[in-house]
Length: 64
Image (cartoon, rainbow, N blue to C red; front, side, top):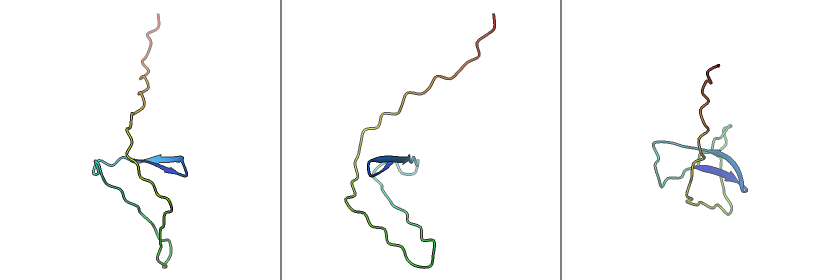
């Protein structure tokens, strides 16, 4: 899962327990008062993901 806020990429999450079809939100209250989380214009999309090409692993070059 990749998280974007206001069209700006924030971070990626990968959890082997959740393969497909799950979405959740966690909200943490730092005090004794309850917390309410609200979203305006929340959009959730399924997108095709193509992982980036892996970088080549450097190898030692023998000295002549």
